[in-house]
Image (cartoon, rainbow, N blue to C red; front, side):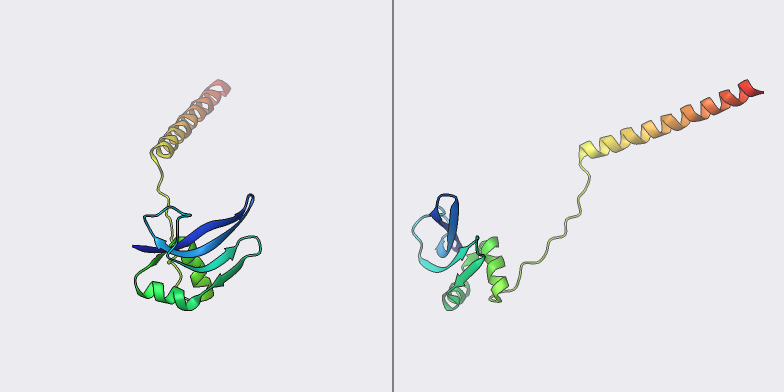
Length: 123
């Protein structure tokens, strides 16, 4: 399967990226089938060969998430749907909640006992 993704270029501590069509099984910086554009993260400059990208998308190439966002920003494809995460409490947070609830109940009982003892000692 062909993927459209970024490959790193540039010098140490100053990365730039090429947007390439490449077999998805190959390593990131392996030989690409075709160069489709470039991205400079320092200047936020995105250069694309729009006609070639449209061709690769039409024959079934899948863009990576990062490239998908870039293409959506340029208006070539629809943006990814936004994910809404509803975080469910994990086991530890449930245990903490139960401990805090039992501590609250114990504190209320001790306050009630102290209040009743104070009332008994005053009368």
